[in-house]
Every structure is written in structure tokens, then in C-alpha cells.
Length: 54
Image (cartoon, rainbow, N blue to C red; front, side, top):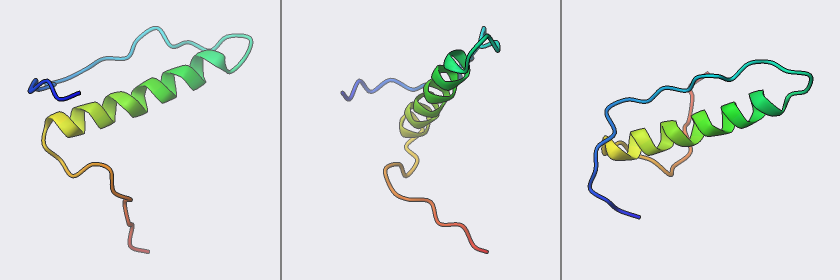
């Protein structure tokens, strides 16, 4: 939903390796979504594929 709020920074802590990969996978997904929310709040072009030059 559009809230007209601006994200100026974020922190992801307490993601430590355990007996399995669960914490790392959840942390990576959370970081991915937080980066998207940050980019959108900064009015960056989101939702399009990134093309890299070889």
C-alpha cells in the first residue's frame, strides 16, 4: 500500500548460522524485500528486470 513514507535506512541483525540454513534463508529473503521497499521509497525504478552488460 502507498503510505507516502520515506525509508532512510534499515538494519538486519541477529542472523547467525545454526544447525540448518533456515536463519540464513529467512534473512536473505527479508533483506531482498527491505531493499525493494527502500528503493521504492526513494522513487527508484523498481519492478523491472536489471540488465547487466557483459
